[in-house]
Structure formats: structure tokens, C-alpha cells
Amino acid sequence: MTILVSGVIDLDPAKRDEALVSARPYVEGALTQQGCLAYAWTADLTIPGRVLVFEEWESEAHLAAHLAGPQYRRMLGHLQAYGITTAVTRPLEGTIREPGEEPAGRPRAECCSGRP
Image 1 (cartoon, rainbow, N blue to C red):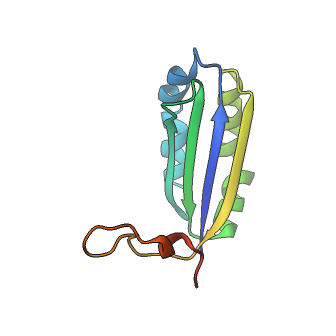
Image 2: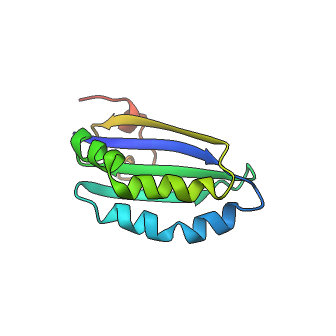
């Protein structure tokens, strides 16, 4: 079962864009870690200073290895330099491995319902 991580990081709004650009090696490094299927940081266009986080890991063990490793510790140090004020992440079990749309392109609510 995959593990999805959704989160927000709030930084000094004047430094957010620089923080994202200079974080590229940390994002790319995470993408090379065993079990990492997706790892992205992006600017929230509605809240100054906010970064949206999305991760997908093959398993809880892979995520735990990432969180315990040097790549993650270096990333935390990087964020400190950009005035981090908030960091909240929520790991969720992912059970759906199919597109969330019907053939006609209409969204399907059940893609996110947690059904087995």
C-alpha cells in the first residue's frame, strides 16, 4: 500500500521563491531514494510564503527511512535559513491506483473515498 503525504510549509514570504529554487537538490535527492514515487514542493499562489508538499512512497518503511536519513535532516536545515514558521504534514494510506475520472472526463468521487 502506498503512503501519500500532504503538507504545508510556511516561510518568510520575501524568501519563499528563493527557498524553492535553492531546495531543488533536496527534492531531486528525495526522488532518488528507494521507494519514492513522487516528491514535490510548489508555491501556494493564494497564501504568501506558503509551500505545498506532496509525496508518494511505496510503503511506510520507505517513508520512515527517508525521515530518518541525512537527506531529510539537510532539508530541515535548509528551511531554517528561510524563516520557517509552520510545517504540517499528513501521511495517508493510498489505496487507489487508477485515474480519478470516468471515460468522459467527469471526476469520480469514489477515487478519494478510501474504498479497498
